[in-house]
Image 1 (cartoon, helix red, strand yellow):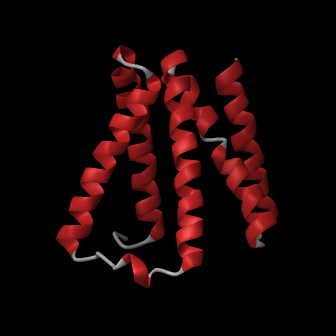
Image 2: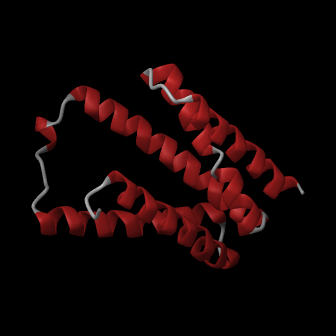
Length: 141
């Protein structure tokens, strides 16, 4: 199971939850944009160490232009997401901000259908709808 996508997705969810908790405490004493910068520097340092320690470095010139473009766009989207997330954490409760952030699940399903041609079953779409409804209930009620 340690090499399955489900295992890594589960760990991602656990770390995302910790991100909300640690971020809410950390952003209390600093501007949310500076908090995002500090978080980003930590990520850069840690990932640089991981890539170096595991020998995964690849010369930038060997990476295809299409890869650079889409990873660059992904980086811009990530940065925008983090800036918005930390601003929301600064202003709101972590227990209400995080569920709204998880509306990304709904958006991923729709975007994957529209842009990647991925298909979900009717049951999966029902689950996506419940996630959306649950998010609204947590955030509003």
